[in-house]
Image (cartoon, rainbow, N blue to C red):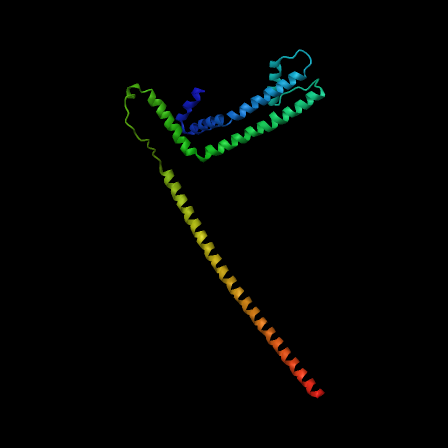
Length: 225
């Protein structure tokens, strides 16, 4: 395992070394649970065996069961139930959980790939400096400088270009939204004006109906007189 760390010297393998290290750290708790589950099913199979069982044999069987390698020949009904639970727990749930954990770790490492790359490089430099015994008394601090080529400048230009395009799109969409709001406001004003006109017409009609009713009432009163 120590030899793998020396691949940090190369840029292409430095990322992979960091990824392997992070995966091992993240799956430590998972392997504790998997070990317990494997050992538990080994004890269950041991209790079900009425002959002269050996614990080490059932630990091997339980481990092979985690890998999908098992031989159910001669199993009783209870052993089949235990086999079903073991395959569901260890082989399906736990191993799929392992894949999920590794995927999350890959995502985290991918997000901080550049920072992790610098850390691995610094760790390698620090490790090499510990071998320089003639510099052990040197306590002066120094800085780690990274030189980048034209690729980073082109990347910055591309980013600035994208930002400019996004700003233009936002501005254009903002203007279009304002125009739509103005048109909606004008439409609402027209609708409101029309509603007020209709309301006034109804009031005029109602008042005219009342006046005509009063006139007809007066005329009928005069005729009775």
